[in-house]
Amino acid sequence: EVAPEAAEAASVVDAFHAALEAGDTASALTFMAEDVMIFEEGGAERSRDESASHHLQADASYAAASESTMTRRAGWVDGDVAWITSEGSTTGQAGNSATTRLTVETMVLKRGEGGWRIQHIHWSSRAAPAA
Image 1: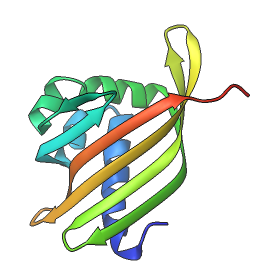
Image 2 (image 1 turned 60 degrees about the vertical axis):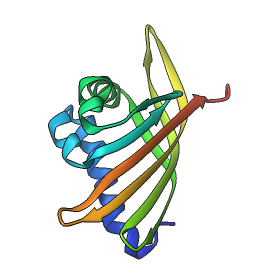
Image 3 (image 1 turned 135 degrees about the vertical axis):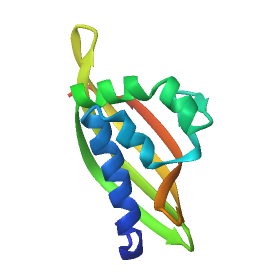
Image 4 (image 1 turned 90 degrees about the horizontal axis):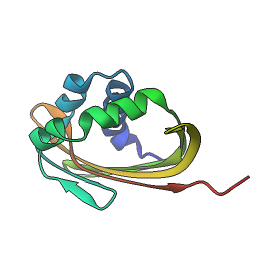
């Protein structure tokens, strides 16, 4: 469950995802801190600029072409730092076949003069078990 004091930070996470799903990478970047650290698939991007020049467009394309469902979310705040954790699944295309992935996400946000900004993202997924 998202603690009431973490609701605003969770809304930033949601707005970030909405921007990706709309293919609006410029807006998605506004939700990230300049020195954001992104971990995904064993790799790391160490800044907003590095993300913009590497995987952000691919992340937006995948988000637009897939259907995501959140099954669980929690969130906490300690001072000017918030943690938002989400679990769910994503169904999309991998080549010519449909694929479903179970997903987990951790976002750490920091509150500053401009409000909450994403400081760290960790995305992980695995194939969903066969039904």
